[in-house]
Length: 280
Image (cartoon, rainbow, N blue to C red; front, side, top):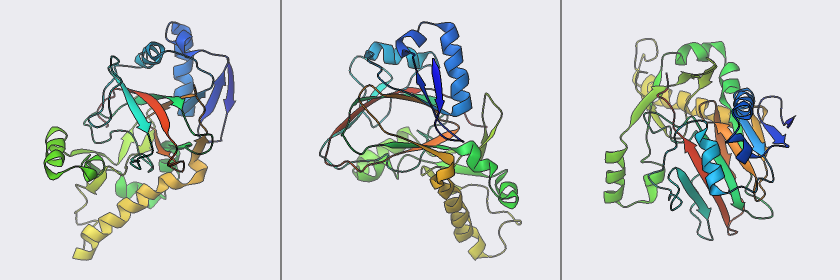
């Protein structure tokens, strides 16, 4: 197996390995897992594997979960369809960590390209450990104990009817997570706010709020500043898809952005999402 590091902060492409073999080989799996913790996202080309292989590889890392909005591939629980047609309905073209609106967001995901446009449709991943590491010290101190609410409603629910949106919220109410979470395996500190973050829940203290202008406007400005860190190119890697390309990423330590520059061309991807633990 050859390892090609793609940037100084995130991403590596592995060649000379089949994910079907990783699903059956304990030592190979252990090597892939160590590389994932190091590089945050791993890429594989020319993986002519079956859906069974895709699911089996992802399940080496944990149990899989479905999505309340995306369709599940029939007969393959935990494998969801991300199919884009001539309809302009993209949700993923924003920096985000998958399903931070869950009490226990996914620990990772395995995304396979079935078909894609000849040009466009890249995906960007961001190292949010680096994003936290380079924050000014006064910001680190200010956010060290902050928590933020995360919700699905204002994203996936935006195009639903009122009744559908209320049902979505009933099934998936707002949750709160630390603004700085700790990686459960490496112990690293991670900046953990995403577009699913609606507001801080413990910002209004005497240290932060002197007058009304410090409260909601001040908190919103801070949240927007933290959200903007994912867009810094020095923390990123960009991947161009081809059929049978596969990416696996650490969903706790990264965010990603699916570039939607290929409409009205179609694109078909399938993702296995790995269950995680509650952030701390």
